[in-house]
Image (cartoon, rainbow, N blue to C red; front, side, top):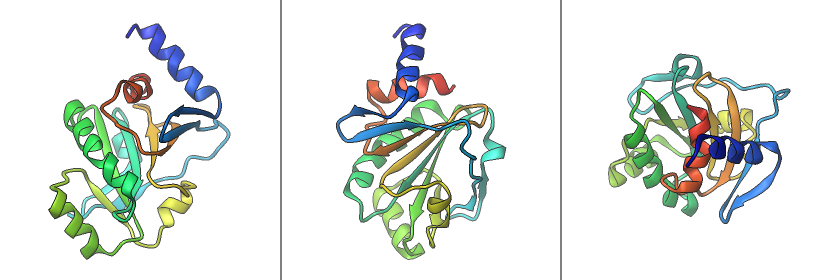
Amino acid sequence: MHKTGVILGLSLVLAGPLRAAPGYDVQPWRASQPQPGLALADLQGQVWRLEALKGRVVLVNFWASWCPPCLAEMPSLQTLSEVYGPDKLVVLAVNFKQSRPSIEQFVQKTALQLPVLPDPQGQLARQWGVKVFPTTILIDARGQVRAVVRGEVDWTSAGAERLLAPLF
């Protein structure tokens, strides 16, 4: 796709609330809206902070294993992460209010390689205003939140590419 078309497409998506496609919607992050922080440890104990990820696009995906759309979307998030590589894009899978053994069992069963960050009390989800699962926060390479995607997305689709391209 031509670069101008990608920019125009994202500007239309970020211009206001609209239905982007069946199954998900995209809301722009208002410039006046404060940007919450993120400092959580993954299952291996590594602490992830947004400030440390500047220079890379970051997707913060809020999910739970009891959520069928979350489970359906997870393989495409894994593929997306592999396609771009950790130097260009980081996907942080924030698990909502599940026990560590439940999360570990899911990760082992699915062979998920994404950093999985437990949010056992749902505090991070509250800070980011997450009420729908899955919800993915799109953060550009400068560390600025650009949009919130609510619902299941095939992150390997052309529609997802149109959302992601301007973030790099």
